[in-house]
Structures are given as C-alpha cells and as structure tokens.
Image (cartoon, rainbow, N blue to C red; front, side, top):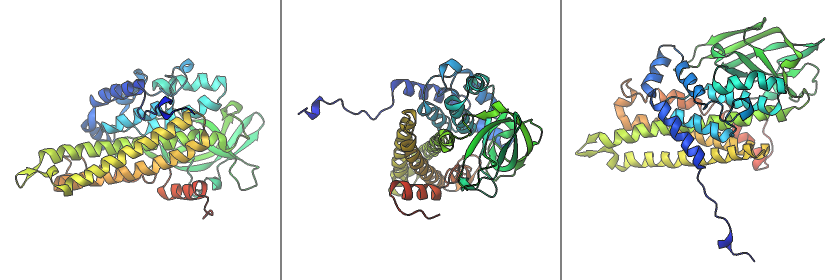
Length: 394
C-alpha cells in the first residue's frame, strides 16, 4: 500500500505564470483607474484606449492559439485578466463576448480560413465581435429561439430578432445563434453564423439602460440577411456541442467579471472603514462593520475558487463538468458581488450615495450580475435537475 505521504500534495494556488499575468494587468489597469473609467461611461464615451492597450500587450487573446496571434493559454487565463480589470474598477464587458465566447468558438470549431480571418484581430483588439442569442419572445428559453437560417443556393438567408446584445456599436461582426428553418422537433438545433454589422438587412437600435456603462445594449433586426456559405461556423448538425463551447466560457467570464467588481467594492469599503473614525476609533473596529466585510471576503474567495475550477474543467475538455461548475461559479459570484456592493454603500453611510466616493453606482452594476448572462433562477433550475436529479420544473 502506498503511504499517503508519498502522494504529490494538491496545491490550491494558480500557476506562477498566471499570478504574473494578474500583476501585469493590475498595473496596466491601475494606470487608468475607476475615475477615468466612470468619467468615460458618464460622458457616453468608449473605453477604446484601454481596450487597445490591453490588445497591444497581448492580454485580450491570452486564451487563443499562438499560431493565430494569441497567447496559447486557456479560459482560466482570460478570466484572470477580466477579473483583475474589474478589480481595478475598469470592467470590460466585451471581454466576456469577443475573445471568450466568439474567440473560443471559432478557435474550436472554425475552419482554417475562419481562424486566419478572425482570430488575430480578436487577439490583438483590432477586431471586436459581438454575440447574439437572446430574443424578445425566448428569453432564457433557448429552445424557443425563432431566428431562422435557410439555404438559398450557395448562400444562407437569416431572419429574426435579438435583444440585449452588447457592444454592437463597437463591433465589426456578430456571432448569431439561429436555427435551421426545417427543424420541426421543437428542440434547439443551433447554428452559428458570423454576420458583419454592415450587412444589408442587419439593423440595430440602442436600448436605454439605467446602468452607467461604456458598453451599450441593442435590439437587433435581421431581415433577409444574405451570407456566404463560409459564414457558418462548424457543422450545421453539431447542435448544442458548439453552442456550449461559447456559453461555458461566457459563464466563467461572467463569474470573473462579478468577482472582480466584488473585490473592487470590498477594497473601497475596507479602505473607508480604516480611515473613517467615529466615537474615537475607526469604524472598522466595530463588528457591525467588520463582520459583513469579512463575510464578503469569504464569499468572494469561494466564488473565485469555483471559477478557477470551472475554467480548469473547460480547458481540460470536460464540457459537462465545466457546465455544472460554470453555473455554480456564476451564481456564487453574482451573489457575492451584490452583497459586496451593498455592504460597500452601507459602510460609507451617506457618503455611499455620493458621486465623490463612487460606490453607489456599483449597486446597479452588481445587480446585473445576478441576471446576465443567465439568471440565478435558471442556474438553480439547472443544478436542481442536472446535479440533484430532481424533476424538471419547466
């Protein structure tokens, strides 16, 4: 029998290379900072300067293959980049979409020509791609997607409508989820198409949002958009396998986005609790302040660990295991983010709702992490059915 001591111990730390990557991103994002980011968002301007700087340093494409200009890493590396940006108060939502969803899908299922055409630009930030799956009448029920694609000779013709599509005004193209027109079973048979945003018949209008963000949301109208045969990504009949190649990274990145925001909120709260003195002592000396912040630290670290697990499973090729873990990570991160933002405002008291201290705006931003890209309720449905084996409720 082999002694336990002879086994290689498990080390629950990230590789040195990823730790270095985090430090480099922190330093770069710190040169911009929350005040710069928030000022851009409030003015209705873009954070293109930061995006391009990230691209020049190779951080946007760390997950993409080296032969196409990427860093040759995994989704865990890209999630680390996303988290550190958010932790410095500069969350870039399009990182979740362009290099993560679109880049991962093209790298895994695209043709050689598609990889050469799109991946280098996605990696260095000179090309941005949006992702469109949500529809007005489908919502979280992806099986009800009604956007259709039909063959017409050597072309595809797409019709449909999408909603809450991020960053179309900054994108060169959009990866659209459609279904073949002859799919009569009622089950989702997704096909993925790359559509240039200037294609005839493709139009989009902005949605006015309460959240202050440099990335805008859009409703998309797709009327007889004609595409060449090579606009199709992968196999027309590959179904959910190809779709989840993008949705698992989406959830992992959303979790990283949320934990980064949560870290930023907690850091601001801790700093204020140390410097703000009432009744002769810093308010952080009082358990009514200290304990909620300690709880947030615990919740954030647990969410980060689950996010790292989900990324490791995805990078190892375990799509089902990654799907379960990614949903758990996204749920945990959203809850931690909302609580951290709320506690940051409460710690600041009246100052928490002033523009000067800059934490009040985190309330709306954090609340979105419970909703998008998949709601906490749908995650609970997934876990109760697929993890616990309970009867499906819908």
